[in-house]
Each structure stands twice: as structure tokens, then as C-alpha cells.
Image 1: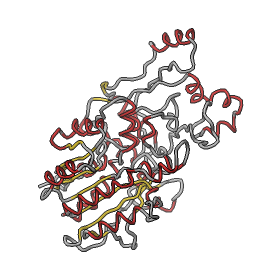
Image 2: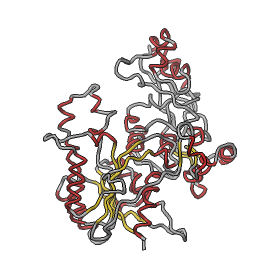
Image 3: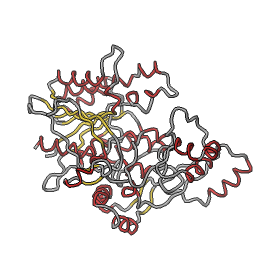
Image 4: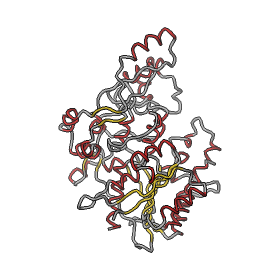
Amino acid sequence: MTIKILDLFAGAGGLSLGFELVRDDSGNPVFELHKAVEIDKYACETLRKRHGTEKVIEGDLTKPEVHEQVIRECKGDVLIVVGGIPCQSFSLLGPRSGYGKQMEQFKQDRRDHLHKEFTKIVSELKPHIVVIENVKGILSKKDPEGNKIIDKIISDLEKSGYNFENNDGKKYIILNSADFGVPQKRERVILIGILRKWKDIKVPVIEPTHYDLNSTKEKADTKLLPYVNLYEAIGDLPKVEPKITKTGLTKNKWKVVEGHNTKVENGLDRTIFDKSKFEDHISKISESGKQFLCFVRPNGYEYLDHHTARGQQSSDIELFRNMNEGETAGDFINRNPKLARKLIKYNMDTFKDKYRKQKWDQPSTTVFAHLEKDGNRFIHPEQARTITPREAARMQSFPDDFVVCGSISKKFKQIGNSVPPLMSMNIAKNIARLMQ
């Protein structure tokens, strides 16, 4: 019998996917998604494509009829409730920066109250385990009365009978996805609650599986593997080029560009996977990289999905070509101010990393949902373009057979908002030991 999970605010389902990938000693799945609840229609399409219609509840959890449906369809079946409570207003990269946003609107963001829906459902279902994931900004975010939201979440669930305390006396943990073999540095706050009536024990420690070779050399003699770098994670994917967009071009220039674009290989949403290139690549990389690629290329999946380059302005393509690996816009301005003035159209006073060229030999920087609008912080280390949805999915550790629905921008939004499944799987392994 598999242990059934309810995934609230599921997005594309990265958090519950990590649980579903855990296997017992006989190779059988330990966990199974029972229901996923999500409001975004494109994410729901993605969930249905993977799990089928019957497992997806599309709707707003603040509506009584949706809440009642969740309780009706989950009561008595679900032993684990997980959720990435919507976090845009908690994020230090988004509205909290104050850049182009009204701070009063940020202070009163309705999404700050969605944690109440989560705690209400948990209090009614009484699962054995609760797992919540969020951005680090939640640690400082306060409600209008000045109370920290994270304290409110923990307090409400403690009143419902859950223990969050670990051996260090803390009630939350901060995990970096790179510490678990994800080719991305991404710190997140994780809350794990255990129902006291079921087991009155401390929350287990989630031990890293990987380490940063550049900063913790003393760990080199342990069983930990070095971080997975970007080259290892996406270096096997075929070269694609961006088509040039019409922005800023005269009629005559656009006619020339239209002709150029017909010859550009910008990728297909689905193509046959090049196994020979993959095998050649995997033979050249570290054990960390090999294990990662075995994780993301399951069961000989024959396709490569969503490896398509988004269109770029000609000035951006020239900028990308001239930037060095690892450079931000600020670095480029200092190195080549004349060319920077010609190519960079944004005000760089606030964000010196509005553009960032990623590095092959390191994990990527934190992937986020702003990819929906542009990928300027995720410029390919070698090719003069921003990353493709499949590259973003690899950076998030989604298996290659995970198909994302919607336009290219909606794909980026779902991928950027997700919990890396490989990190989630490591949390789930610890919970499996408790459940068994």
C-alpha cells in the first residue's frame, strides 16, 4: 500500500513529484499523489497530463466549495499534506525589493493569508506529516499587526497537534538545493510537522548528499559528492539559436531580419533525443553529474521536450555574445562602458545583475518565476541566448519526461515556481523512514 499525499498550492507538482520518486528496497513506490490542488489553469493542465484528470482539483482554496471538495475527497485517505504556500510577496527578489512596486500593496498582499487555508485543511484532515516549502523571505515577513507569518503558521499547526522542533531546537530548516545534487544554488525554508498523537518525536535531520568543492574542502574525505555543475546538467543538449524580435527595428531592417530568422534553428517543442551525444557527454563528467543525468533521463525516454530558444532583441544577442562567463551587467559596464551604453537599455542603478551569464563549472543561480517575462539573468554560458524551458527544468532537476503545458512563458513560470524534485525526494526519503 502506498502512502497517499495531498499537494496544496501544487503548481506543476515538483514537491509531490519528489515524494513519488522514492522507492522501497523492492523498487516499489512508497508515496502516491492522491490529489493536487491548484488555481493556475496552465499548471493544472500540466498536472492532468502527468497524473490524469481525477487527481487534480482546479480552484481557489479560499472558496468554500473548493475547500469542501478537498476535505470530502481526501478525508481518511491522506496521511501527508505538502504545499508551497504562494510566496510572491515574501520574496526578496520580487515586490519586497520595492523596484517598480507599491510597498503598501505589498504589505497587504492577499496571498499572505493563504497559509490560513493550508492550516484549516490540515486541522480537518489530521495527516501524520505536514511539509511546507517557502522562500527565505517568509522568515521576516509580518502581518499588519506586526506578527511574523512563519510564527503564525507554526503556532496554528502546533495547536492542531503538530511538532516542528528538531534536535537543534529550531522549528524550521533552511535547505540549499545544491546540497542535494540539484545543479542550482537555491535556499528554501522547509517546515516539517509530525502529528504528536501518531509519533511524539523530533523532526529528522535532512542530511546533505553533496558539497561545494570550492568552499568546504574539509568535506572532501566524506561520502558526499561535489556539487553538480551546469555543464554536467545541460551540456548534452543540442545547440539552438534565438530568432531576432521586431523590437526597435525599422521596416527595412525587419525585412532583412525576417529572412535571417527563416534560417535560424531555434529548436522544437518536441524532438527525438540524441542518445549518442548524451552518451558521449556522460562519459566525460564526474560521478555527481552521472548520477544527476541518470535521475533526469529515466527509462530511456526517447524525446527531448521544450528545448526552444525564446526570441531576443538584436542588441541583447550582441550583449550576450560579448559578456564573459559569470559576468553580470555591472561587471560588463565596468569592463566595457562604451559598448555597455550602446547595448544595455535598462536603468542599472537598482539591479546590477539584470543580466547574468551563467558559469559552466558551477551550479546555476536561483531559478525563479520571473523567467516568464525574460531570461536575462540566465544567459547561456556559451551560446548567445537565454536558457530554454528544458534547460530551466534540468536546473530544477525535473526529469526529462516531465512535460509542461502552455506557451513558452507559461512553461517558464511553472518551472521557476517549482520545488526541485530532487531536493524534495531527499526530504521524502527521511519521511519514508518515519512512516515505515
